[in-house]
Image (cartoon, rainbow, N blue to C red):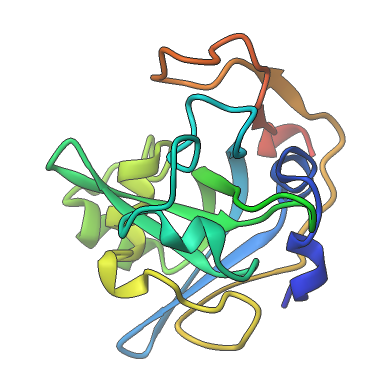
Length: 186
């Protein structure tokens, strides 16, 4: 598993360095794994697009808590998004949104959860990912540095990382804090 110190660095650095790591999800005896292929960084006072920008709330309090924990929130009244709390020790808040994974194990369970037999586009978006891995508000605050039902471990080393503006935001859209890897070219 990734140690807590991995997450105790600048949020943007963690968002880049978590690419290629393996997410593990255990659901009722079934193990699902996948390689993280897309992330976005959300910091604190220098990031108006961040949930933590204005102040701490009941919804975003995980972003202010100990690094290495899950921050899960409900979006548009329809789906969940999964983030990992990560920030520099001098920063009060930050999180990395896990936007996509390349599934490895548990494909049948992912297909069932997503309601499709198609292998294309199973987990290539934050809502698809949380649906596939059954990540809900029950995962809020989960310690991702311990062997549990949800954690992240070492994976593969990406050869090339692509940077672009974050997706679906209006504020701070100039920041190139969306990071992707092409698993087929690793």
